[in-house]
Image 1 (cartoon, helix red, strand yellow):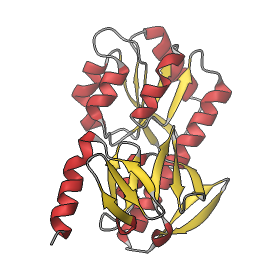
Image 2 (cartoon, rainbow, N blue to C red):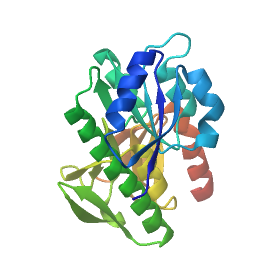
Image 3 (cartoon, one colour):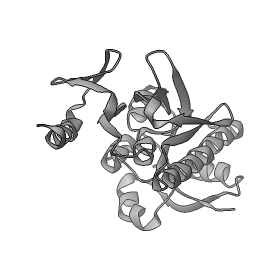
Image 4 (cartoon, helix red, strand yellow):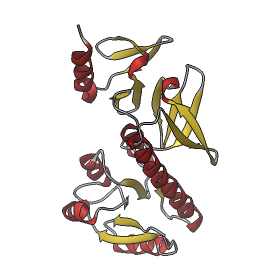
Length: 240
């Protein structure tokens, strides 16, 4: 069994011990680092190379959200463990895999670990499929792997800790995945990320305006301010 390298961040020593105790019941989890603040974690995160980071949100100095924002797009999955429910929207904005409310029950942690394993499996599979230059992708839906042809995809939309893969205006497939992994697993010559929440199929582009792209079927997708350079490069490569 491959161990899942895990880092824990929480400013309360007792909360850190409780979190560690919960995770120790999962033999696939290997805790490689425990930190009382994000600043300490940042100094070692690259060397530790975790697959997942569990972090609190409200901490003195830098918050867990600040830490993840600095790391974004991170090479590791992020699971928040917090007593505050009101930061969930911000957490998923940075593609958090899960959001656990303290006190965390063993049953809830089990669901989070299962989600983490599915996520890591999918990330591995999408990387392999991208390297083989196939013209389709498999995504896990309701316990089975569903094949989707690249040519059928119009756009991909972030949906909390899932993504929606739209194959038309009315047909969609919802799968547990992050936008970052979808972006890395899809061929860059066919797809482009234009917003934190949207990836589009280049061959479905009908027109481009200042702040939006229109796809076939009059589908309007917003352009994020941090992604305008990518659109400019796309235009420069294909402009007469």
